[in-house]
Length: 300
Image: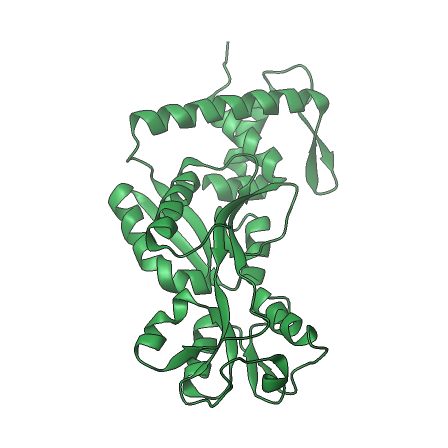
């Protein structure tokens, strides 16, 4: 009698969870024919179909739902046993997305601590603004992402990491009032991230609170380049306070005291609600400890 294998259950779980054989093959680092063969062998163990064709994808049957539930439980138990017996032996690639302002402060330390604790992990890191990273996570191109003010999604979990202090900043040579109001900046060159980004919305909301809109607003897709533009004196902008420390220590940039203040923005880890793997879970644990140790965020 041929018995079902863990590899077959894993192929079934990821095919159903991710919605296609192609996505499962990428997740498991296998060829599509290999995944299809495992699914075929698993199906041969049952008298009732586990999935049905629906367009170009697959739809799970009620019987398949029961097998999926049991498969997930088995895979989770195995992950927990592996973590307990070999806590430092996580291996293989883990795909991480990090909001750029956060990465500028935390990424070197995150990489070092993960390398020290889990030397067999291979980090594949994407850095950018959160509104660009989030679609990549939701299309399964990332395993976990650390995002600023991410959106809710029924298939994903948001794990709060704290609030990121954010403020208007200007080059050291700018002459501005001690307390800056929207009317003081309405005619000043402003630089923001792309429309759709939290940075862009913060700027728009701040001016809108006084019924105003900036007269000159330029767009820059990079947070680090936005900081460079501000320190050069070409424009003023909104940045995470913690990432501005090196510039302030060199007297290249100053934090503006404003009314209203820019609200602190929430940082979340975002990952699939079903099947976060041990590597992504390890990244989450290390990042949480790192942020707490740095005092990067506050918790209200």
